[in-house]
Amino acid sequence: MLDLFPKEKIVLPLPDAVFEFYPNFFNKDEADELFEKLLNETPWQQDDIIIFGKKIAQPRLTCLFGNEGKPYSYSGLTMQPHNWNPTLIFIKDKIEQEANQYFTTVLANLYRNEKDSNGWHSDNEKELGRNPTIASISFGEERKFQLKHNTISEARINLNLNHGSLLLMKEGSQIYYKHQIPKAVQPKNARINLTFRTIL
Image 1 (cartoon, rainbow, N blue to C red):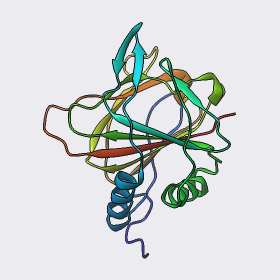
Image 2: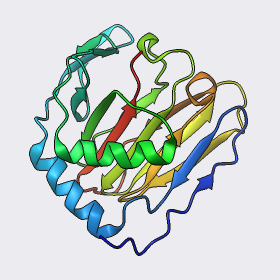
Image 3: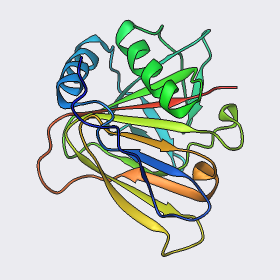
């Protein structure tokens, strides 16, 4: 398929970490097709997580895919991976070429509407190692993504993650920063986000 848009890379102006944003990583036709496949091929589930000692239903649907049956744990939840499917392998291969990084696992997230969200956190689970690279790709409705430094109050940014965009969170990103997808005020259609990571 002919890519009509160059894969422009924007380096976010933030200290202590490297964040690279590709607003047109997949063109609209590719992104439309991948969104529909992911929506229909993924066995979405809603799990309970523990936040501040309290069990709540995650405000989004998720599914884990990965190699060799390696589980992934966060917020008191341990997920067992499904096997890769052709759609995910296609996306994974494209991202690995750009990031020069091999990923073993992807956490798929379905934000059904404006009420679904993901609170402030870092992807700093021990199985990812001290300084992981996380590749986050978005399909569907554009949502606001917020980043803030742990100690430098002015080092923060709001980024609109659009349909087909890729955000690479690299060196320092999970050590010095937290990120979130807040609830939206305006009505939102469904958004799918894939976060690729490497379990050691």
